[in-house]
Image (cartoon, rainbow, N blue to C red; front, side, top):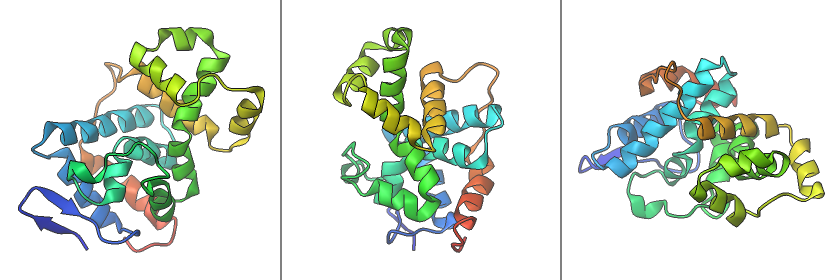
Length: 200
């Protein structure tokens, strides 16, 4: 159950959340007084808007929306001290994503750093066009892929979706893409949760 404490943050309870609980946290993050928090949720809307502009399937739109704030949502609080780790596995974020949204969305998000490594390995120009920070991140995530790693990544059924998100991040929001308010994405969240047969 969500509770608002001192108007500063919203907390989720347990590993499984309803669409209403999740949406309240998405809204609270989007309108948060701390720009560090609100910018993460704004970037989430930007990324999801790119998915919408390409008429992507619902699961990819949800994955794009959740990619940036998923650790915050999994922690169930907007208190920054509770979501400081980058690892989806160390924070239990992957398990939370799979429980609430299914394996396809969880895998699409988990594969994101592998997608960048895959693209950097196959397309030298892709790597050279990345910012210095992004290049360092690719290196710290494991650098260029071996043939075995490329095969493993390519055999994952979610790898195409992960590469889509990578391309949208690198490209940024194009001028013609309108960025909807968070309310626009509620039906997508409800559909993703409903597909797992969970209460909304």
